[in-house]
Image 1 (cartoon, rainbow, N blue to C red):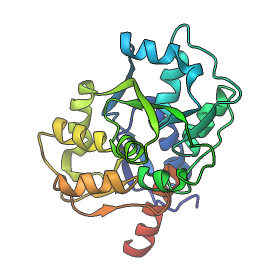
Image 2 (cartoon, one colour):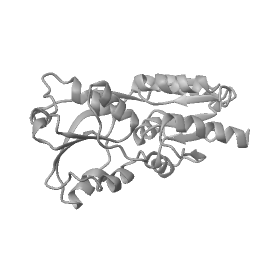
Image 3 (cartoon, helix red, strand yellow):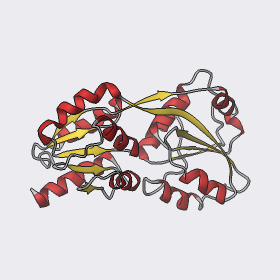
Image 4 (cartoon, rainbow, N blue to C red):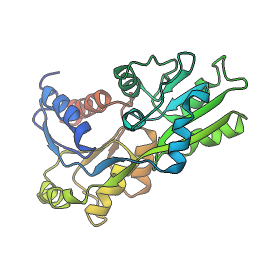
Length: 253
């Protein structure tokens, strides 16, 4: 697949550190990555989060919904070690890999990387009865999991360990990148990247580009926000996005 993207220009809007990996995959596939990070991640802690994290040993399950959440969870000063018997869930392989980097084994990963599938499959776990769970999220995390856990009668606390902020320093860079409708593909890896794009592009949608969204939540949000020509990979990963663009080029040229 070394030339599968045929020199197409691809705008990468995700956070700076995560954009690097995406760019490398685009280059390997023969595309031209243009990095314009529209978000920045800021770890956060207050009295409420500190109290929850200090009590981490009291939970039977800890549920991580992003790799950013994993980093901010473990990088805080004075965090408590997770007990060996505590079970850990991750939204997908990237989040699971980040947990493994910190030395923790993941007990549950959904087959499809979205909250809907996770809730359905998680119910099959045999250790939920009388469980107490800590849900680790960011400020812009969706409420599907909290609602589902409440409906199932599972006791849980939610701790917000990071916030996704718009990277306004990228506004001029974005304007230059979009000049002349030169982008063949514009990628969104979260609803927040969609919102940031519209905010920094003064609400304009680029008509000549194809938009590639990592999953159902992001693609639905893009559609609701007025975007057209939306692609969504079958596999909700960066590799899936690259393959999706490659397949589109193979058909459309």
